[in-house]
Image (cartoon, rainbow, N blue to C red; front, side, top):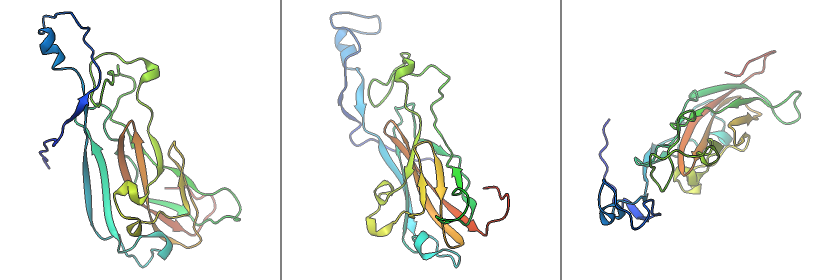
Length: 217
């Protein structure tokens, strides 16, 4: 699929000057260089939506948002090397049934996403919403990906159209815990973000009868 997009307002304004005043360069005059200083860019929002979230016989009422509007969105800035993260999570994760008070720890798994930024390469300096080719000190390199349970606002939906499942939690490193008293499929969403970019990962958690030494898959 090819999507052609033109920024309605591509620049918010000049961020800072990187060329010292009073100097001339082979690349152009002082005025020509000043006209090409870095600008703060405005990313655009890409989204996919429709009706409706699944209404499965094995979908507990508290965990599915059944028959409600479905929406995923991400921010896209073609001038920014640190692009929106992409999902590496399976569409269905299976966990054993577990509720607070049951023996052993709560089932856990990791939500997996990949940042398009390559940390072992020389990182470009983030002068504005875009980047230049100047090396960036390690201490100033882009922050690692962070995770939290997606809310209706993260999905661009009114609160009446999306309710996060209360038995699902995820820390900033992507480690998720899931508790449920009923077997079946549960819909969950996670927001993955870094430096103003974000992606929403939407997937199902299948809760089954626990078995000895059962792996999470």
